[in-house]
Length: 313
Image (cartoon, rainbow, N blue to C red; front, side):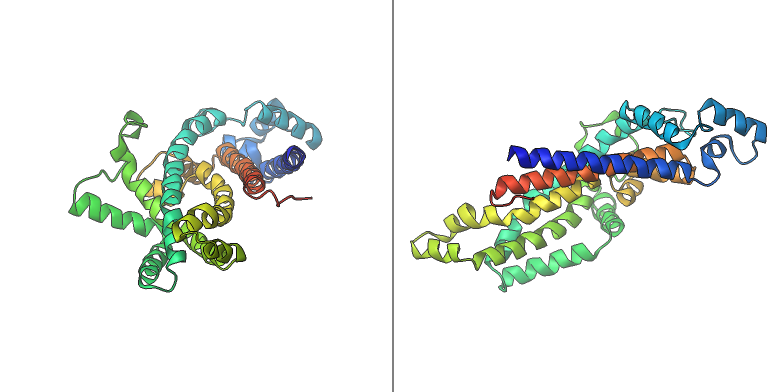
């Protein structure tokens, strides 16, 4: 196990190194370059040259990359032209909000999806399965903005129970559950439909295995078989989905955050794109890329822990 984890960490570091090269390449492929993005299209040639010299952009590309990588490793991802704030400071401010919003939504969705998927798999092709499958298929087919609009109409307009905007989020961060309720509910509904489908399929596959028939032949009840045997083996696809969802937790949901005016990474990325604030855009891209690698690493390690037979050579 130790050798496996060490090997996967080494592979992850190689991928992260390649990611930094790609991000650095994007940095230099921007239309007009970084200097023009900072000074504007009407800046004089002299001003552009002076700023390029000042920021070291006239040096050879390998030297620029090493300087940029050194700064990135130390958390210096540049400066936001629009917000007049270091990018690392912005990411440190917005990331906990996404961690709270999407992390809570995914955790609740998994908590609901696992027993729901087990029930559907156990009662497959029965009335309960058809009802839940149809309902979840409808939820899965709806885009997140439509789910959010429906939630606002029902729980904010028709039944004025919850606020539809998070404009006062800064004053209620982590304390006012009402501020988070609608965006968490919107994200959770879509994820329940997504996760439960995989759990259901995995439960059905495991129910056909020989070990289930053997356990039943020895007199084990269905509750013991489902909880003690089938559930553990059925969690494998969920582990993979959690690894895939990790970048989603980091980047947030642009549509949902815009709909509820929630100040997260998705909304930060959208505002930076509208104002061509390239350092912020690339900072978010780098952070999400790192999250993809970490999520994949966590999923692989969790796979090996859940099933000792799995070893990647």
